[in-house]
Every structure is written in C-alpha cells, then in structure tokens.
Image (cartoon, rainbow, N blue to C red; front, side, top):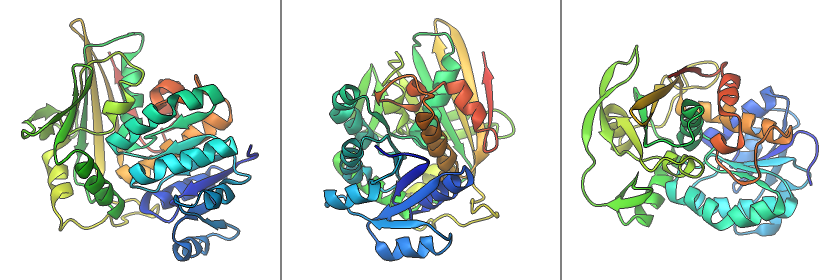
Length: 343
C-alpha cells in the first residue's frame, strides 16, 4: 500500500499530464513523474525542484511496479488507453492503490469495466476510468441533474466548444478507436452500444446564454455512453458537438493547443449542456469553462483527493457519478468551472 500524498502520474509529460502535475502540486500532493520517455520526464522535472522521475513502460511490468512504489494512488494520462489502461491497472492492483485515468476512448473505458469489475470489487480496490472532461464531467452533470430520479428515458449531453485544437494524444487515440470500430460510428441506444455505417445527423441545439442555438453534429458519441449507463438506468444516451469543433477535430491541419494565459490554458471555451427526460419531465445541468484539457486536471485530482480521504460511495470499477456525491463534487470545481442545476 502507498501512503501519504504521493501520486504517480503515468504520462506526466503529455499535454494533459502536465496540467495534472501542476494541479497536484497546487493541491499539496507530491507527484511522481512516470512514462516511457526518460528525456521528456527529466525535462519536466527540471521545471520543479525535487520532482521524482521514474521511467516506465507498459510492456515492462517491473518498471511499472517501481514507478508506483510508495505512491498512494496513480493517475494514468498516457493514451492510447487501449494500450496503457490494462497494464497500469494491473500495476495498481499489485501495489494495492487506487487507479484513475483520463481516457476518452469509448472502447477502452468499456474494456476497463468489463475486464476489471469483478476483480476490483473482490479486492476492495478503486478504479475510476474516464475521470476527464469527456466521460467524467458529463457523468457528474447527468447524475446531478437526475436528482431523486431513479431512472430516466433519455439523456442528452451537448458539447458547445467554440473550437477544438486536438493534442497529438487525442489524434492517436482517434486512430485507435476508428481501427477498433472498422471505421464505423457508435451511439448508445436501446440500452446498448450500436455501431453504424450511416452519417450522423445534423441539427440545432439550444445552448443556454451566452452561446445560444448552434448547429451540432448529433450522435457525436463520447465516453459518456460508457460512464452514464454504467450506473444510471437510462436506455438512450446521446451526445452532440458543435460543428465548428467537429470540423477542427477532423481537419489534419488544425494545430495543437496554444497557451493563452498564465495557467497554460488555451483560449478555447466550452458549455456542456445536459438534459435528462422522464415521464414528460425534464431536468438540466450546465457547466461552463475554459480549455477541455486543462479542466481534466482538477477533475482527476479532486477524484484522487476524495478517494484517499474515503469520500466515496462504492468500490470496484466505478464512474465519477457513481462513486462520488455528484453535486458536491461539481461545487468543489467552482474555481475552474461554473455549474447550474435546473429542474
């Protein structure tokens, strides 16, 4: 077992990993920098005195064990998670410490639930996949919007991004996901994942002010279709993405994110608009903020803080909305995002 507030970060030198390391330091944790490329780890360590560097590779279990030795938890920021999640989870189970990742890959997250649910529950371990902007935030908002409802007919999670400059990791993960789907798109309907060859619909979504109504790609499916149904009785979970952001993501010429403030965040802004419907009733939750990659860091670190403090509702493999008090968790993110809950 690990002790104290030491947290290993696998993939620490990546774009999101750097935000996670900075957030851990700000919250008083001691990050251990890990990942495959020792040169990049040492360069990152040079930016903060006393940072521990432990190179590791997913095809070398002993190196992962050394990376996690003495840590109280591990945050996996290294995609594609189809390759990294299982080996790092195995290392976390051997070390007896909680595992959190920031995976946005639908199939990789589904694999985590499928392959580790029983083992983690039996061991009393905590594994939280998709603790990120995609998957984690949408799940927390949907859970909070549900309130005292035990079931709903449908959930709609609309992403209003004014732009999307994808990281190299996002593009690499997209390649893996498309390969696993044989080029098909995926949606969650009728209580299951469905793979389709047709084009997704385009429609108008009435985002709250100041964004207003925007054209969106319907069934632009993200990790919410794994996290939300993992614990909420909702047979229809649909995602939407503003066409501007979808166009940026699909274009090979879109550059990577560029820092626009002292925190390293890009100028990208977002509105996440969640609507759940049941029996003619409707409930809504809205989050607004800046930079989808940067906001992943406080999500993941807040999760680790709550796990280590015992502020959890279950063990095993669990999504954010199942393991945490969703409204309280969202309130804790107030320095980073604004959230409104509406009946």
